[in-house]
Image (tube, rainbow, N blue to C red; front, side, top):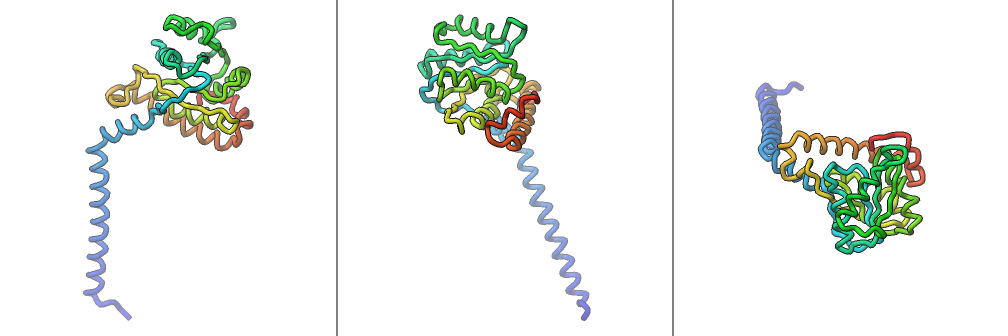
Length: 232
């Protein structure tokens, strides 16, 4: 039975109208996103920075890779002097055979008023955040630190929290994260700064890569298989 021409024409008009409505919908959505791109991207950067409500802990752990202004160390000493923990763990890479980033961090911490007896020096050869978290396990175990505040640069906090909690919390160690300000990345104005854009873009990539590899690695004990890789 053939379809009357009038019905076919009506069906074709309805199909065209539907596609026009779909196209209009996407134009409105993408147009809105484009117009609101600045506040949306600013909101994303502010969400990306993790700065948790802190509680008293047993130690503050300052991660390696501080900028030349020592803003991670400064934040760690601020928390120490505010009474959030009695010990300050300084984590840093070996720079020479007998010299570590930790030696610089120690000088900075003492100059900022940290008591020498509060410092725990943790030099290591880690080349990634995953390797650093694993390298710190013997140090935290030796001092029986079961609740720590991890201090790192603001743009690095989300990835650091994912990695440290993934490795430590199943072993009974509670991890809180505190964001140190970093002059290279300001969430409210990062879109105007090429270095800020690069830092955030690299962090997003590294976070996705870290999440994938940690998922594939399985339980914390098997994270050792990640050690030969770098850049996480």
